Image (cartoon, rainbow, N blue to C red):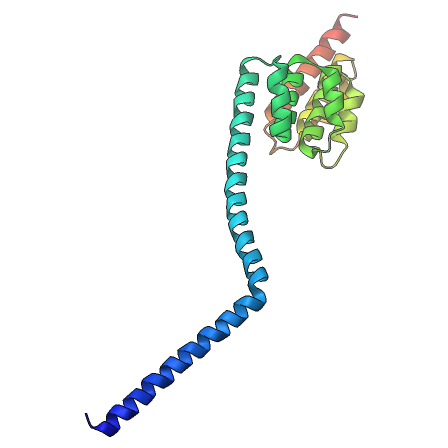
Length: 207
């Protein structure tokens, strides 16, 4: 390599070093001007990561406590401690458990409370079972008249049954005719309809 080439090479190296030094100075100045913001962002990232992990852990623990309470209530429905835990950890599931127990036990008071719930499904089912346990054709009618009723065919069937028991056979038949052919209750409706006619015939023949 000639002296000229060596000089040019040295100049080029020097230029590169100057550029690097200049870049470092710029970075240092930028950091000094914005170090508080940079540190804040770094802290947020770290805290956010920790927080996400903690929330995931807490959520998992909450789920475990709710599951344990639910299983305990399946074994012992009267366990008030387990019920309170479930209400705290998983309110929607607690409402369903209350509905299940009230429906099985005929707890009209609890069903009346659940009928006012903001949970539309729980409220709907509670209103249906309330009519069933009260053995009130009028209550069941009010329920099935609602367009969003989930158990409308069941309500129609129950209403017809109660009307037949009250001797209102013609009205009962009208209700049974409202049950669509595609309904799983249609076969039962036909049987009830036949039973009503048979019962009516016996009653008339005994006079």
